[in-house]
Length: 112
Image (cartoon, rainbow, N blue to C red):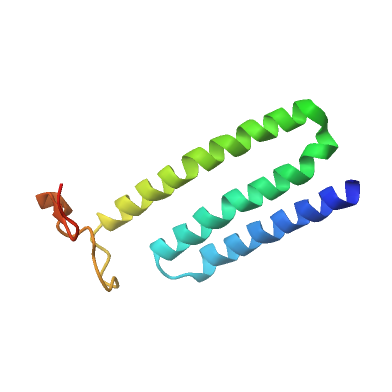
C-alpha cells in the first residue's frame, strides 16, 4: 500500500512540475492561467490520495477539506484573473474577442 501511495504522490508532483514549466514557457496570460488552472487541482488530488493512507483518518479529513476548497475556488479565481487580464487592454494577440461588446450589454451570443 505504501508503494502505491508513493507512486501516486510522485505522479502528482510530476504534474505540478509540468504546470510550473507551463507557467514559465507560455507567452500569454491566458495560456499561463490555463496551464495552472487545469493541472493544479489534478496534482493536489493525486498528492492527497497518495498521502491519505499514510496519514490516517484525521489527516485524510484535513486533505479532503483542502482538496474540496481548492476544487471549488480554483475555477472562480481563474475566471476572475482572466477577466482582469482582459480588462487591461493588452489583448492585441486575440484572434476573436468574445467579450468586446460586454460593456454595452451584448456579446456574440446576443443580448442578456
